Each structure stands twice: as structure tokens, then as C-alpha cells.
Image 1 (tube, rainbow, N blue to C red):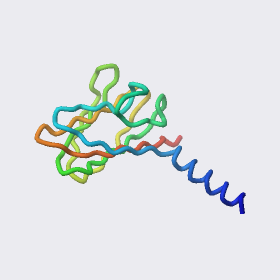
Image 2 (cartoon, helix red, strand yellow):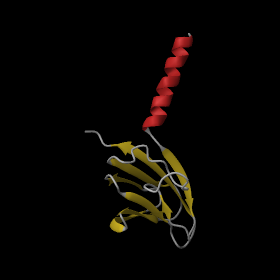
Image 3 (tube, rainbow, N blue to C red):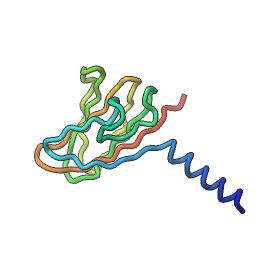
Length: 118
């Protein structure tokens, strides 16, 4: 019985290690970096930092917002995300993901990460 409980715990721990999700409230005057700046930031923890991965960004608020992918200060792409929309963005090694709020009001976002299968 103890072995079964231990196996179940390891399954759940493995699942949580393979995925990361965080929800954020985006205020109109706040731009938030999601990846690439290290510990202590008010952002997500990318479990695949230093590797290529996908960021799955969901707009769970009532207003559109945009995301920005940068590398060393150079903007690679900007994408608008409408209310209820989900975008899957490829993040290459060294890319940074930013969430840029809607200037007209507060919205919410959720960010997941997925490893790129080889």
C-alpha cells in the first residue's frame, strides 16, 4: 500500500515538473517580462530556460493585450491576443517573452510552457 501511494506521488511530481502555469493580472501601466531575467522577477518560471520551447499564452481576461518576443533588446515579433484566445509561440534559446497590457484597463493572462519534442 505504501508503495502504491509513493508511486502516485511520483507521478504527480513528474507531471508538475513537466508543466508550468501561472496566471497574471495585467494593469494598464505595467509591461511584464515572462522569461529570461532570472530569479526574483514577478513572472513565470520557464522550466525549459536555456532550451527551445513553446509558450502557450491564454487571454483569460476581458480585454485584448499583446505579447512581445525579444532577443537582446531586438523585437522578434509582436502578437495581439483577443479575449478568450490562446496563442502558442515558439521561444528559441535566448528569447524573452513579455506581456504588454491593454492601456484601456486591467486584463488577465495565463502562461504555460511546453518542451519541443525532438
